Length: 172
Image 1 (tube, rainbow, N blue to C red):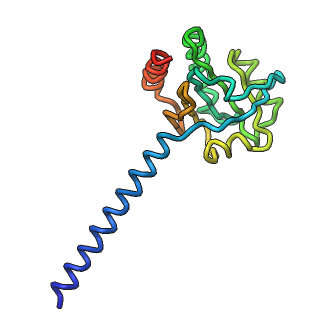
Image 2: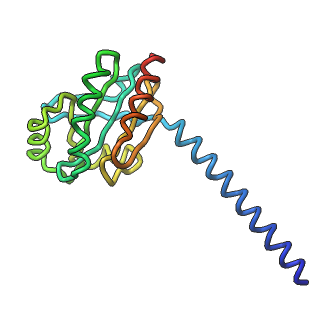
């Protein structure tokens, strides 16, 4: 009887493990093929931008907050990427979190000389549309066809990001 229980337990464990592997593979594949939401953003300067209108070009979306030290440290590097790759077609959009004060966002943008558009997510709709962004910095790289090719919570690996942007720009 002990051998039967042991064999049955191993079989159940292996079945559960296989099922978990299949679920993880399907989840990963669907996340990789995920399309970016079609959002209408309003920048701090009042400009309206829709992600749909940016189609055909890679887009880097960066969620940040003025009280996030990592975010503030990362913004100059994003500005450099913007300056370097915008002539080749890259679009960069910053989105300030809903809990951020518009006056603080504007102050940071002005102080750091951020050249790319920065939108306010006053109701948290944009964060929800991107699978519920709660923590920052959070970046999403979108290919020209609208598929999300990279999601990153925390500071970016600029070397990896640069390589991915260059690869997307050669596809355009």
